[in-house]
Length: 504
Image (cartoon, rainbow, N blue to C red):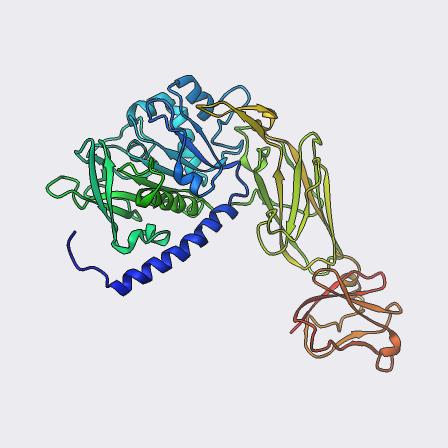
């Protein structure tokens, strides 16, 4: 190693900070798996090392499947298509990633890509483009690139990172790696605080060719310590992410993945953690119109905005609720032999762990009704809970409800009522109810029912005011006490619908 190094105090700070961040990261990894079938698919198939354990994934408690057979027919059955699954295991019917991340082992990159065929390689590209992350070592790093040559395109590579790799020129060797101060891997581990990892196995692996066609936004994670070799100080690990909706590519030229202890295990964990943190953001299937059913019934190959839902997948929707809505309902209709859950939330994308409203009962026919909902954008979601069973030792194959793999059709409908108070305003009634107030709310008493009810944003009644409390019966007055929190409230008078007001 050469050059100036951080102080001992700096080392200690890095160690403490990275240990703290790793706890946060692991918690994030475990909690962020909603919307996917499983966390990780490990490709150990044809012409790759037939690995069946990944100690870093076990340490992170990730759910995982793998293919570790030298069998091209099995490889294509799993990753391309089969009679029960037109999409292959990696993708949902709409092309979204079914796993959060793919991990590709070392081996013969060209032969593995050839065994996948054109459709199989396109499955990988679609997986990453639609939000799934990719991690790989040695051959897995070659496969991610455009080519391992200085010009041209290698047709059997995946081309998911638009840069080039180059042979590091070493076989059956143990090498050190420098960790740049800017490396994102330091978010997950301090690696002893010396910015160095020793004794990483290198057996024909690549370096990132940063002298030709180096893609903007590529992050160098590690660099080789191999004095007098072509790969010295060249990228030994790198990462790249095309957009917020795409997955992140994280690759290494060396082999830390077989270790179950020490810095090499921690390097593999940090690699996976960074890949998983780069999974693409979820998107909306579309906006729902009031009372208009949306049929999600198209098969694989149809319009992704109307395609059936896969196992453990979420479909997200939104709709804009106008002021004065007295009741909101979200309705789900489907085949009751499947279990579909329904979620609703006014704050953001609705998941089981976060949604304000949920129906997780058995079956596929659900209704969520909410009185006096807050106006603004709402988010609904459908989750398919029904999934497959697995069997096999050197690979995972499916049995049980395999009919879910080609998707479950359903219909979703949002309905809301705007009620009569807004309509009555055009006739001069209730026109003096303010949109925003503090201290005192005055509601015109004329033409109203014997009482007016006040509800908070959750639909709980917080006050009732009657004519006898009015000032000469011209107004009904509500004076919130000091404990009443600021926020949205809803006024209802007799048969009139709710009117939204805001307490400052």
